[in-house]
Amino acid sequence: MDTRGFVGRRSGRDNATRLPPGQSLTADFPVLSAGPTPKVDLASWRFTLKVGPRPVASWTWEEFGRLPQTSWTRDIHCVTTWSKFDTPWTGVLVDDVLAAAGIEAPTPFVLAHSFDDYATNVPFADLGGGKAMVATLYEGRPITPDHGGPARLLVPHLYFWKSAKWLKALQFTQKDEPGFWETHGYHMRGDPWQEERYSDD
Image 1 (cartoon, rainbow, N blue to C red):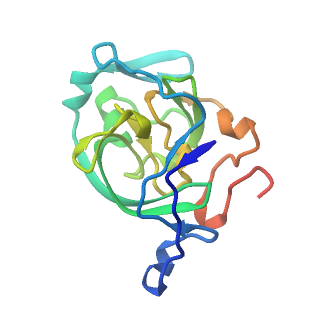
Image 2: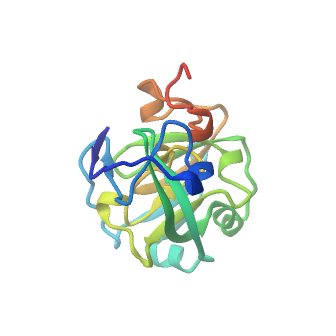
């Protein structure tokens, strides 16, 4: 994983309860990627919800923008040890995606798929209940491609590799299937407070 722009510092006492163990606070927003940034054309962009291989709902960019919008300010934590506080996002809660599709979660397991063929597994327990969104704005502006725009998954309570960039689909699976980084030794869940960085943590 490539990380650019990380200048870390340890948090003061006031922020100690917000900083997971082993993390350093940064005012920057480092750029991380497993490969080159894909070019995603909004005219052909589609977001799809799947149960196994079967699509159950799909939205164009315009259609997705008409779904209920939620704004959040959240702390984020990267497995490479940086944390950034108070990051502002706007997007569609995963709960609202399912409501728009007219379904409830059919399995406990989800794979998030990206336009660069990246995938990561996230238990639905970490997506539902207002815990995650498909974000389209950062600081009130469209998310830039290097940070995962036009749309990225945002699961702020897990390490940031779980917040898949360039999101194109959420797929419910019958079992907890590892994604890209999980097959390369990263943890299947990735809780920063438990330091679940790697498979043997």
